[in-house]
Length: 89
Image 1 (cartoon, helix red, strand yellow):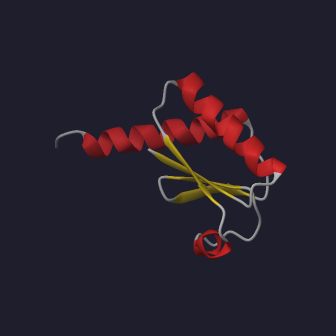
Image 2: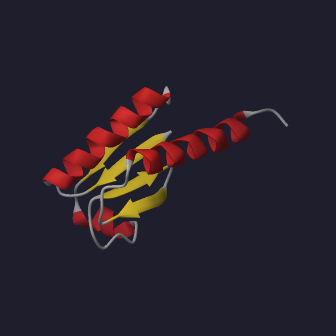
């Protein structure tokens, strides 16, 4: 699973990354984290305000720090989808 934190490195961006990493660890979900700080890349996601959270290419939130419960739900959903795609048909 790929998790991206979009933002310029402000305190809210750092807080979002910290919370997302904690939730992934606490949930036992393996995820690679990436910071995206350049404006053209951020704009490429259609994000107009940061921080933003992108999981497996889908923007899940922008302009706020979501709750741990929200992030956990999104990570579980993405993990389930990844597992379903990986399962033999």
